[in-house]
Image (cartoon, rainbow, N blue to C red; front, side, top):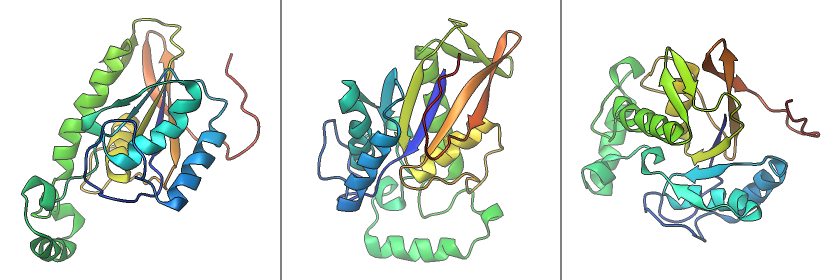
Length: 221
């Protein structure tokens, strides 16, 4: 299995509204151009399935990959972005600005949970079980410090289109990096990280592959 972690293109519209695909008008003009460039750069990749956060910018980015392949986009709520206090607690924008300013003065080591919204551990508690369930549905099960495959010859490629925050937590988990208040992995808009599952005897382990920015793709034997 290969997991493609992809951040959405530049957004337009409501950043917190949930949608059901298909969607439109959730990317800016720049974002639409970014999504086209992303689709072109990954044109030679045969995805088995494409998943996205249910927020508009991720779904519209995912559609740019799914439509040429005639695939549906599966919306996975656990991949949604960090949820601020305006969403989790329903406070108004003025209160939220005060909370953000207050949180900005807290050192990272003391900021596991602030009044500004969802904490890093809360994100990890929804994202990590979510991706493990998704992988299990595709025949890949966590075990023995790595993963066990129903099919040792598995060649599936899954695309997960998410957000800077949610993908940072997910990439940290896949790399085995301890969860921190701020993720040590950053994704540019439409940035792509590829995680391979590499076999070691009878257990598979995740390995981050950095794709070349251009040139022909050579399939692995």
